[in-house]
Length: 136
Image (tube, rainbow, N blue to C red):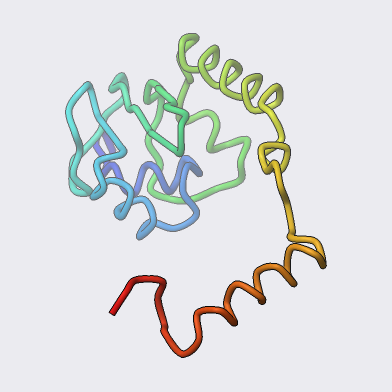
């Protein structure tokens, strides 16, 4: 076997859990082969460069082997070799996530206090039966 469909190879190399997930991601344009957007039926061969975008991280790998069967992870890792730029980019992204501020710290007010809720209820009672604050 010297060529294999990209969706099948991504599944066998354990980038995606199912072949249909791989095909779906390819359809969304998140996979490129040799710098060109791929379709699920696109065939890859040893030596091709595959870029896979997952969330904010792009992994670039070089195809080293082909397999039509999904095997254990150590065997799947022998099917590709990740480029040095890709590994450095993943490490930078992991470091940024680690150093990023906690999202909950950006909330300045938080939940309303009992006093705030009473004030809101008093304002709502003043609206009467109207459903909006606009004038009729």
